[in-house]
Picture 1 (cartoon, rainbow, N blue to C red):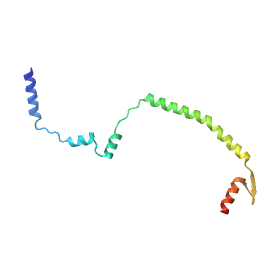
Picture 2: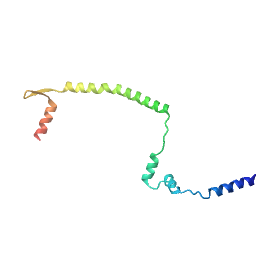
Picture 3: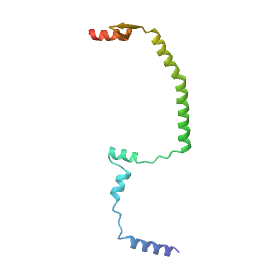
Picture 4: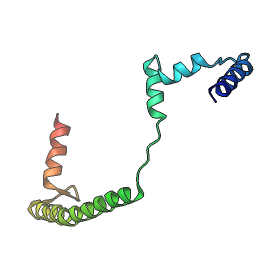
Length: 112
């Protein structure tokens, strides 16, 4: 049996003796990129597999958190702006109506 195996091996070696692998340099460049650009390209060329359940669960959780935060914080700024408008004073100058603080800022900028 070992002689048969040796004969097959010898026959295979004889048949493949004329075939030579010429892509050795290309394979080495792809497996061991020499430059930073080549390494970055090789890094970006990787495939990433993400389970659908994980992506769906994370996105649903983020959506719920965003909606809860939105509901909690949307009402507060509107109340503050309404309170600020209640404290602001309207004045009439030259037949036009202005907020007093904005008018004073504009006058200061014009004077400078």
